[in-house]
Image (cartoon, rainbow, N blue to C red; front, top):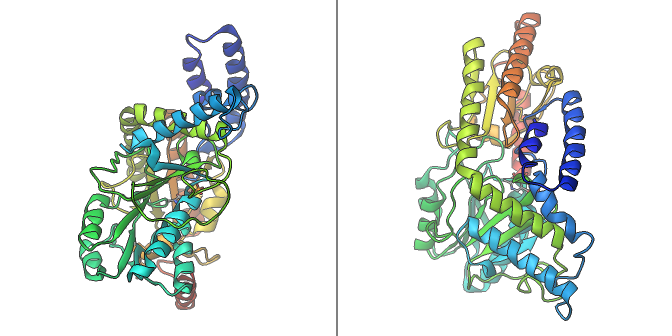
Amino acid sequence: MLFYELLKIKKGFSVKKKIIYFILAGLLSTQANADPIYLDYQATTPVDPRVLESMLPYFTKEFGNPHSTTHVYGTRAHEAVERARAQVANVINADPQEIIFTSGSTEADNIAILGVSRALKNQGKSEIISVVTEHKAVLEPLKALEREGFKVILLPVQKNGIINISDLKKNLSSKTALVSVMAVNNEIGVLQPIQEIAKLAHEHGALFHTDAAQGFGKIPIDVKKDDIDLLSLSGHKIYGPKGIGALFIKKGTPVIPLVYGGGQERKIRPGTVPTPLSVGLGKAAQIAEQERIPESKRLLALRNKLLNILQKNLTGVIVNGDLEKRLPGNLNLSFAGVDSAPLLSNLKGIAVSASSACSSDSLELSYVIQAIDPEHTLPPAVIRLSLGRFTTEAEIEKAAEEIIRVVNDLREKNPTGGARSCKAEDVDKIKKELLKNM
Ligand SMILES: Cc1ncc(COP(=O)(O)O)c(C=O)c1O
């Protein structure tokens, strides 16, 4: 797959670059033959070769400290970092000065949630509203705030994975410091109505943060139109490098830093900015924005094809989460009558994520699946298939074939497999575990 992408990219390149690309393509194609088909793009993405190329000079020749601007080494690195900042800002219609680089979305979420709540505490704002299906990068700092005396309200979701706006309305008050709701769920891919949520938060004098790790560069987000105060994003979800992300902070938003040091990143996130990583994030953001519409269409067509083949050839295929208000490349499926552990261990030809509810032979908790299925009516075998830039139609056909074969085999071998709901003791365990995790 990558081999063919690289062949396309080589057009117009110098002989030296073509040779590098051929070697890279050769290595990747050999690996592609041996390895399972990658359908886990929401976990992470490979670095796009165009991104890698943009980063390389900043590891060697352009090694200057971007904050040492008394000489050309530093000024060239500084210019590269500022270019990257502008590329990131452009995707969400922000001012470049409103973007600070972080190590990823986890850090950005922590700065936003802890930094804003602590800054507003003296103003009588002691409550934070979020959602049960948020990523741990949001839920864990919220737990820390609870220990500091804040009240944290976690809204439930409907069966489709989306919050009910009336639940938000009921819980908003003049005490609300911050509302934090993710743009796109990492397991079930559903989109939350962030524009509507931000509007309501502001009507009650609260600030609005969104964890957009799974949405940035993939769905249209405009911080001005959507009225967003803080937004977290990550490089490795958009074909950029790991270890870099950013936080958009609207001008004038109060934030207390988590770390103290030099004055970098508006004194909110001190430390030397890693030039190669920020350049890679900037380039990845630029490509994501330029190619977003055709890429979304292509991924949606591939996802629909995969779902159609599975539903045509198998009974009991359930889509978890809203199918319309959803990231184009995400499918989260349950298979009736199948246990999760044998399903995953037999799907050797594809790399997917598990988000199991519970099964007769293992208990793996997905609090997201539990949240959309509180009565435990879903079959226990749940997998997340996430498609991306380098997924091909042939791979989708092969993946579908494998899933059909494995599900049929398991159903044949164990016709009573996949208990319809968890056993009573399992449900208790789950509840305890969920309470611990909240
Ligand atoms: C929704 C969401 N938030 C936060 C994160 C954490 O991002 P990072 O790996 O950049 O810290 C992830 C990554 O899985 C995510 O999917």
